[in-house]
Length: 106
Image (cartoon, rainbow, N blue to C red; front, side):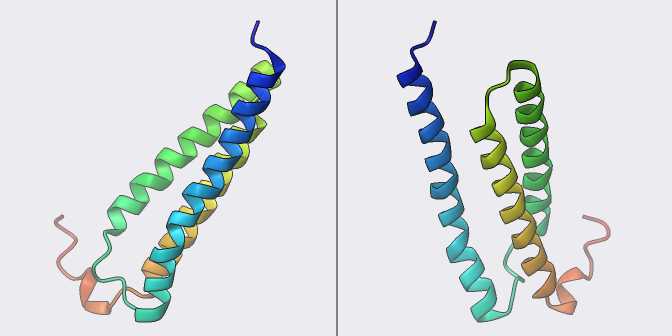
């Protein structure tokens, strides 16, 4: 059996990971908002990340339903999804019209 102190520490680390990871989005958002340009950002990568985050959230919810534990992972996954979605919105909003041309074949 895992001691409660280890579980509490693991939960705290998962929540801390959320804040650390989310702080990494800030420079990207600041750059996008300041420059109002997302021409140099790969939208396809962010779309792949949103799929991965969706799978992570699904896994976290299933584990919570099965085990009754893991709410910090649900919070982390949901926050990550929100941040990725916000980044996608910014990328699309500040995408120059010419950036979409020629992408139909790629």
